[in-house]
Length: 257
Ligand code: ADP
Ligand code: MG
Image 1 (tube, rainbow, N blue to C red):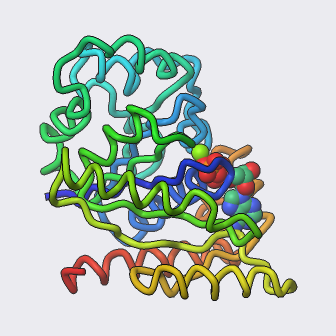
Image 2 (image 1 turned 45 degrees about the vertical axis):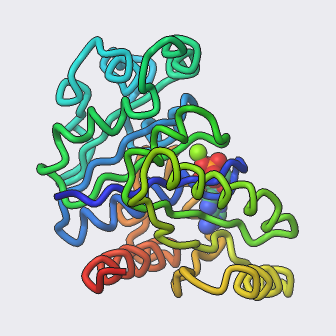
Image 3 (image 1 turned 180 degrees about the vertical axis):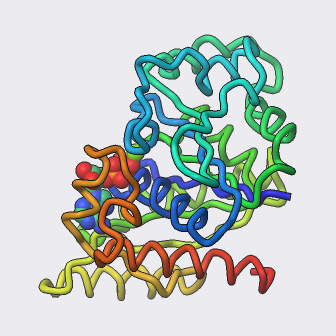
């Protein structure tokens, strides 16, 4: 059964999409069967994996509206072992379109249940908000992975995010766990990055990945080529660190964490 991981943080620009793309690609490189679902109307995971988001008519939006089955939305064209369900700007309307639907928090969970057995990992890239879409992702997920950017305001909003996770656990998905926090855009030349890491560790105490993702220009360039980092620049520090993160995610699972 596929393990479903929602990548969430209501702050924008913290590395959610970069982590969704490259963690997925590195899990696939390690011979895992991976599906990444883009749940952000910005569609950056979709385009970052070389898929023309404007051209796609079968996206997660049509799945959520019940117009197509989830199988029909799966793109196999991206990379070996890595399937993608795209999104585009239409998804921004989902919140309103689904307002009258009963059990609307469970829409994604119900769709994913139909294909879960075909994958080892299903990665959900969430939008930068705690909206209905993010709640749908957390309701469908086994775990939440939270990227935290190593900058001064890193802790801001974390309390609210953890509160939302607790609410979802209580009301919608009692099995949801915090997969872990991963630090992103770490800059070893500044004291600030180090201070942020120490500060968050003091505040959270648990579930922090050993792997820290460095700031690496190759990671920022790769999406404009429609490639994950392990293919765009396989020896870069970005590729090495996302491989280590993928390994940690697999180890945690085996150890039942
Ligand atoms: P989010 O999905 O949380 O909004 P993104 O993954 O899109 O964040 O990252 C925001 C910006 O930072 C993007 O331009 C991305 O290419 C860049 N970026 C993300 N992680 C790194 C990194 N480790 N090193 C350099 N640039 C990064
Ligand atoms: Mg994003």
